[in-house]
Image (spheres, rainbow, N blue to C red):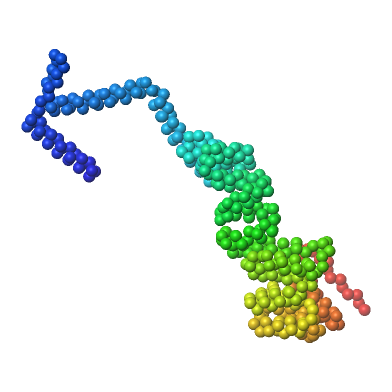
Length: 417
């Protein structure tokens, strides 16, 4: 409003000034051509010249429209198609976000030719086609996008990998991924896709190889990384020992040690992974290695899981291990696994009273069925059958609770003597 007022004010000022000039001196213009002369004032000449310019400009525009009607009509139609493509693209993208794959694919493909950015339509339509299992159309769209947008190679390579995965062609997708990651080692999407393929293939060694990079790029949260590391490592640990290979225990222990050293440090710090490794060592008579590792780990950070394995170590120096476990008991009195370990070590030392004492302490803290059976076995060998039966019955009752509730016969009456 303020600008309009200033414009009107300017027009009035200029008009008043021009009017004064016209009154003061109208000027004189003489045009002569052969026998014809035209006389007029300067101001009339200026106005006539402006009017003539406007008329000629209009006539030229009119003649241009008459001579090139196709050009004007074509531009109008092109603008109209672009507007329609813009609306169709928006509908397609909305349908894609809503999960309406069929409508998304139809609208996006229909508007590709006149879209402002065809690449958006092509890639979005590809995703919609993949969701419907229309893999041939998806591949054609990717090839079309490659021809029209060659500088988008990486984005289209990723889309092609996703297409291979959707088709179930995991090996082909993995081959492309490995090649791409050599060129783009820090690309998180490529790393995530590679992890997904390894999980689907259950390629645990491949996952182990990715663990350091997954940690470095912080691609997974800690809980997910630890679960993945635990599963992959334990699976591979079990595959290190092949009973049919005919290798000696010493050779197999060396294989286990070599595999253990190859693991990422963060994976070797997980208690379940350490436990799986210790169990494999114990199965291959690697008790000394297991003892050294368990002692170092338990002194550094307590773990009930690992404490329970300390009592399974065989060999000489059981008294030293028993004393070490008693030292831990000072601060870990409420650890059922530590009491179980002390019970087992006491058995190795044939200290039956201490074994029974720690078995009962362990079962008081944690009523495990396997522990009850182990304690009952000791009691039977000590000639305490009634007490052994008591613990066996406790275990039976614990299992019976899980049985479905069904009708039972009445207890049989004892016959009179």
